[in-house]
Image 1 (cartoon, helix red, strand yellow):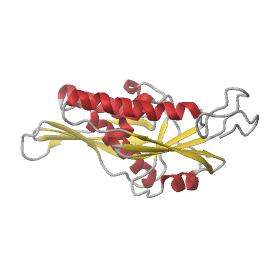
Image 2 (cartoon, rainbow, N blue to C red):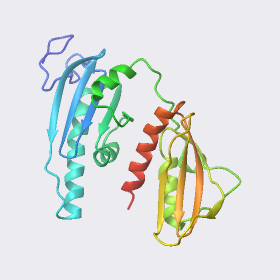
Image 3 (spheres, rainbow, N blue to C red):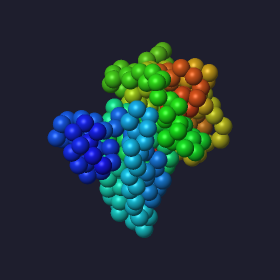
Length: 239
């Protein structure tokens, strides 16, 4: 492929031209599976090319698997960074996307579950206003009259993970209530979005349960569900 401005040769489709400093892609769409990822570069809504990156998942040893996954995500991130896009979208395997967030220097925008054609889904969304990003530190996003959290360190860690999401405005801890039979340790999950895109972080610890309100920058249930998927993937990745 050649640069659209100066015709310099590009190593990969959609790469940023280092000769004339011109972007040859404005959007990147990542369709990730656990063993392969398709990275599609778009310019003004049109595809300029797709790169496929593969890996062989390692499951025999936990440490080996972590290294392999990190390397896989690093290769995907390198391909994105070469293009210097304005926006990056991703769909597919949660484990890969969660790791990819740590490798990218871009905000990674998720495409909702059920998108059979992620590129088409992104084309449909282009022109929409991107969600507001809240850059306040997690500690400043937590407020309310209930200051006690259940679950000890694990409960606090879950709250910090949620508060660290760029599209979370505020978390309001709720009262602690009896939640049924004891046992099972501390578990946290974000529940289904309401009509305004807001969520609840439900933390269970033994026989106690606490529902914490999550105020997001989403304006509807569909977008809130995308944020919920992100949060649950991040919570599942916590040790």
